[in-house]
Image 1 (cartoon, rainbow, N blue to C red):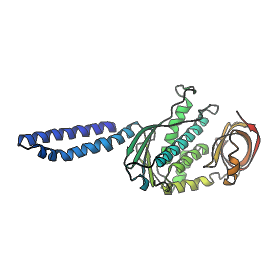
Image 2 (image 1 turned 180 degrees about the vertical axis):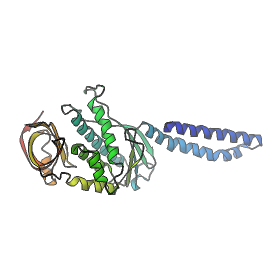
Image 3 (image 1 turned 60 degrees about the horizontal axis):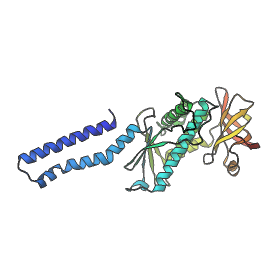
Length: 322
């Protein structure tokens, strides 16, 4: 039974209670004032059911990803537009980044849309529920059954659900490393979690998430402490001493996370690699996108192939790639 069906069942029961109360008052000679007084509790329950519970039920039933945000900035009938827009931006950026990383891992030659967007399926108060649907390819994208973009979209949300299942346990990082042996996928997922967890600066103290595409229907709880813990894991995720030099094209750069993907790698079996650069490269990084570059750093491998590199040196080799 869906959540909407449960709400409909409750509504029918309340209507039956109102009808029974009306008959009882009428049979005993009660007036309109007494009738209204007797039915008032049922009216209040119905109003709450339709104004609060029904939007939430629709959100749970139809959202691939559902967020519940709470905090001082949301204890109002009309939350600030900038706050809600900021949440939209964070979710869109992080989920689309995961989708592109996963799509590249599934089919490394795939040309993805420049913009991968999520649909808004619901907006419900209490404090604030936001439901999102998976992206649909745009008109210029060739869409086929079993398409890597669609597969990656679902796998991105499933990965998000797995990573956030139990982040408070003492061995949480070891569990994540075991679940995601591919460091490229693991780092992309943890980066998304670090950005989706609240910073505490916007008036949002907690973010809970669930959705149809998560491995189960349990809510995941993210806090300011969650954000800091995951960020600590992301500071230096590469523990290997193996040093390599690779050449390719810089794509999908994230200036906030200090990460990009190196594609079309030369002289290597790989065509995609996730790269982490130090904060000291921030000013230079703005010029790297779509350029051929040679990078040197320590790598973590998966199935004997480099997948994640912590850069020590980068050198641009030429003009902008097509």
